[in-house]
Length: 340
Image (cartoon, rainbow, N blue to C red; front, side):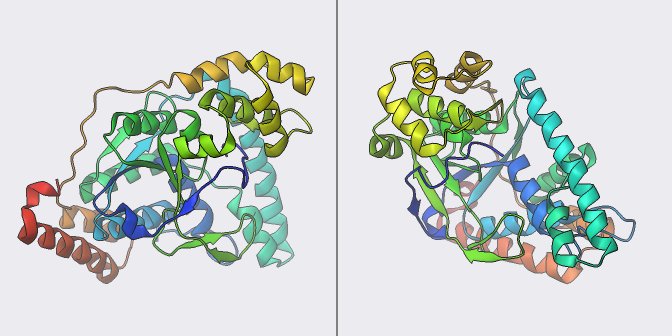
C-alpha cells in the first residue's frame, strides 16, 4: 500500500531503453501482488492450471522478467523477510479488507455483475508461501538472482541502491525513498499501461523515474522531513492524522525542525512515530549477498511452467528465445562475462 503522496513527488517520464544495461532491484511482493490482482478473467477469477492452482503470479513474473532481460535490463527480485512487529495492525487490517472483498465478489457473481465482481476480486489477492516458493523456483530457472530481506524488501533494495550495487529500485510504492533509495522507478512495465485501481480501465503510463535528491530539492525539504510527511499522511506502520494530506503535510514539515514539532503544528499525535522514523532512517538490511545472472535453464523453465502448470510451450519457448538472442548479441559484441 505504501504512503499516499499522490502527485506531490516530482518525477520524470523516461523510456524503457533508459534502463538498458542497468541493474534494477525489484520489490518482489509489490510486483507479484500486481500480477495476482490484474491477471484475471472477466469474472475476476485468477488464472489457474488444470489442477486449480493459481498461476497469475507465474505468468506475470515470467513474461515481465523475460521482457526485461530481452531489453538488456538485469532485475534482481527482493522478497520481504519477517515483517516488523510494528506492522502487525496493518497486516490484520489488510486481512479484514480481503475478507470483505471476498463477500462482495461472491455477491456480485450471484447477481451476474461481472464488472463489480472483477473489482472486488482484485482486492482479494493473497500471496501464499507456495506461491512465493514457486516464484523463487522460476527465478532460479531463469537465472535471475533474488534476495530475501531481513524485514522489508524495500529497505533492502534501498540499501543496495545506496551502495551502488543496483541503479534503481522498482516499486509502485514510495517507501524506497523513505528508506533512502537514491532512485525509484514506478510503472516499470513493457506495455507502458497502468490499470486504474478497482476499474477495468487502462491508461498509457511510461516508466516514471524519481531521483531522491532532485525531488527533495524541488520540495525544499530534506529526507527527515519527507519521513515526517509520510508519518502524518499515514504509512504501512501507522494511520495518518485525520485531515492531513500530502500538501498540508508538506507545509507542516517545511516549517518544523523535528517530528515532535510537526505534531504540535498538526495538533495531533501518532503512536510509535519515533520508532517509525528510526526504522526509515536506519533500514534493516542484509549486507552480504551475491548478485549473479545466469543463462536461463530452458528445460527447467518448461518443466515448471508447461509440465507442472499447463503454460503454452510455444509461447514460453518464444520468450526464452528472445532472451537467448539478446545474450548472443552480448557474447558477439563484448563477451558473455560482460552480461553476467
